[in-house]
Length: 336
View (cartoon, rainbow, N blue to C red):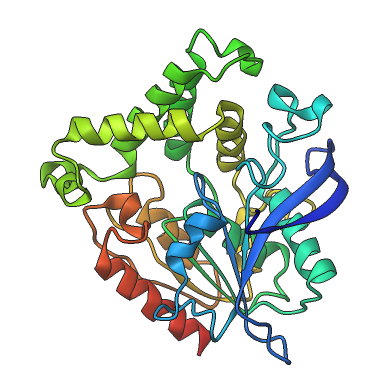
């Protein structure tokens, strides 16, 4: 039995001009919408995330408390729950799945929230990594609807360095003999394993390995961690799904689209939401320097960097209690 709902969008014209046919958004809600509709929190999903993994950020003892707030956890296109290469209709499945942007994701999320759930205002959009990127997108795309955002370990535009890293893991996956330009008959298992092993070197900081913090996660040595990441990607992910979301990540830029026409500074200046930027100084993907640049132009913003040897994965629920504590404190500040 499914523990989530699906919103059928029909055929959606994408930012690229192409059509996503029979589009569906998978989502799950937590808590109850109050009479004034003022307690809405949108929590999109991150790169290898889903509404299930998002539950690590939600709880009665957390800032995202379902007893107080109506939390909407929306699955990103390409993650296997919402429309994705592996579950789409025949003529757009697999390698034929169209390229989607965060603009497309948020446009469809907006339709879900306004048309299906009948919500007019959002108190907060927050999230980790690509979910955080979507919080910027929400604030830029619908500035009059979003009261506050808190992106953590994220950015409003994917840096060139981040783009290059993603090209590396993509090259490892597509080098598998079974890849066949995405038209594989069986999953390119060796490519998926290589993808996972490389990813593990970037998800954590250099200090994480130097201090042998992988032992706190239950691994005897770094090789055990690498093998686990390899197994996880080979067992749990469809290759086309991973590369679909990877392309969306690479295209992340809140100024793309008809509102700002690639004027990045204008897009940042147009954000009306109260904003707390929460980078990890040891994150190898989303650098604190990028958030510092954003802060110069987002009107009602502050930046609260965190130090953690866990790097990007400091935000992964259960890894770093101090990060979790500071995250909840910042969320409560925005919601008060």
